[in-house]
Image (cartoon, rainbow, N blue to C red; front, top):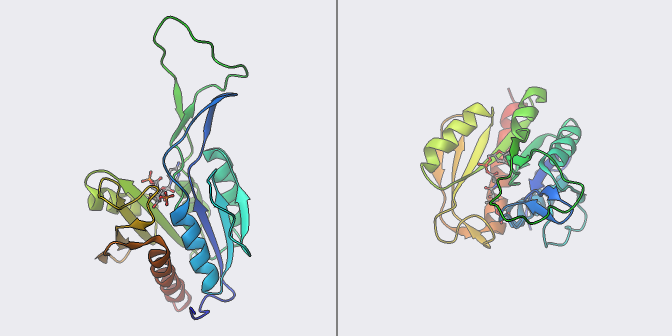
Length: 224
Ligand code: PMT
């Protein structure tokens, strides 16, 4: 069993995709299954933490003993995360929120016409950037990056821009990595500039290693 090194700590985790409604029957989404975020929530609980999991629509059972808050859209996710974050020691954003939503929601089902159609989209809020504004010095912020090119470069850029303590980058074009799989292959970059290429491993094992690093970051801040 894992040593309960996180007893008394509150960890907030997001998981899964969002859905952005077009009309009563259609939505925009992505391939996130929620597996990575759920594994992280479970690993934090195994380490003794108090865990809050904010989850988009997924086909996974809510983990027993973990407070799970269901959300649908990126705006729901932002509200749930910013509310819960104030009482938490760390946020780990494994969710894949949609960056855009339809500019207008249609109350009635969109009718088919003869012409081609374009759908106007508007920007969703960036949740990590919103959290950066309310973050206190003792709190730890961890993001993910799903990239299909220049993985390390884009991840470094997101780490700085979003004010993160650590970022976990998945190359979503690599075999056995990212969306939907039971295993993942990631590069971990922290604020101190340490870059670690971790071998392919199960999302459960990866989650335990991520939680170990988060615990270390929390302890470093405490001793400052
Ligand atoms: O769910 P699985 O099938 O197990 O797959 C796991 C995963 C591939 C979804 C996960 O490991 C992952 O990479 N999640 C982040 C996906 C993503 O949105 O990446 P991004 O590069 O677009 O965003 C960077 C970071 O900003 C992420 O932490 C994201 O949660 C966050 N973000 C993104 C958009 C937004 N509007 N607000 C945010 O805070």
